[in-house]
Length: 554
Image 1 (cartoon, helix red, strand yellow):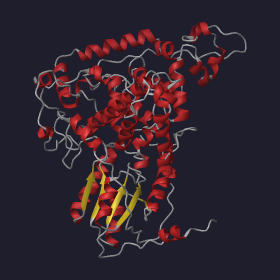
Image 2 (cartoon, one colour):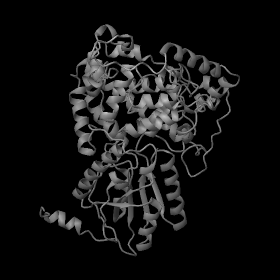
Image 3 (spheres, one colour):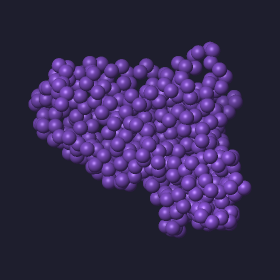
Image 4 (tube, one colour):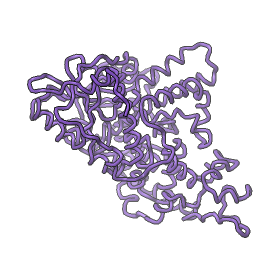
């Protein structure tokens, strides 16, 4: 066993918290870094801190979590602990529910405050945070939540949102400082986070977790790979290197959104950049902006994780679930090579580029007529970069249930022709496609194979007939009375803004307001939509074309 250095030994011997000491807990959740960490910086300025991660068994039993994600988080926690030790502290990991862990700490030595970052997570984490807030109020403990992305908590309306995003991203990064750290008042226990994961979904070559891996990925993207960003992110052949691949590090907070934006902006200051590189950098910053735009939708209306954006689409697919279609899709047996190759790649790597993710959802929603929620839960478990705000917004957009976006019905045959014309992608991931001649590359079910050759599976449905039937059902619902009026209300609440020429700017303070009952606050949720009126036209709400394909971390 290695002998600990003097510094390591001193850190392992940190003084425990004791009664009467005014200490603060820094609660790490999906912000697994010490750099640009407002909660850590603010708590450390005041006095002693206890750095805590709560390994919550119930969280890892949620249907959108997986062993792969737990493995990524475990590696990120190791990097975080190393960073905290460099500052004179260490990370304490305790298994249990957050409220129970805080109550146990408070019983040993009352805490002054809990500092954490705001989290735009799923329904379970939202309920957990509200339970912690209630516990803090009952016990006189300050619960201080800090912003960490461009998402605005308690946002009343979208006017001015982009200006607020720009202001936040331009603020100086929080600099880590030396810590007056404290340790747990009881014996530390080893916690195996991966063992807590109830869902065994894993990937052999998922991206490695941790801040160091995130920084390396950021450097290689900005220094080398960004030149291929424009034009390279759509094909599954070029996307693995052309895309930034920063999505899991942003999802778990190994990197802060602000430091990524500022690092990109610094590279853009170079006047000698090649035009293609400059275009890629500008496009990437735009995608980071849209990252927060989509997360804001879940923040403002948490119900979209489980209910249709546009409630007029309720019942469209929910009661016609076809288990055989679902099983064929998730086991790469749909019969459409581009779809099945994407599923194979996803299950192997935990990642897929946006265009192919959109195609999978579109195929599930239209020709296979699957409701987005169950399929979305399976997809969430496959993604190492699962980000709830982006994930559920995009599931609904590609399924056509937002009511404000043009229905995206991707043909898997056309996607193969456009993005894998020579069959290199499908032949890599589907061994049976290696025997199929080029003449039948896009519709191999039409091929009559010879002796000893593997027969490609036939599509589970006739693509043309099933898609046409789905469109008829979908557009009949979309044209139903009252659908347009409700769509205007959805657009008013969630649409991006474009200020028409000649319209005066609103004041900087004009976009502030009290928290909505539907937003993530201490008030109860409500699925009530605001009444539709003509404000959408006056405010220059951007129609669906601004939500087209993006290299979002989704």
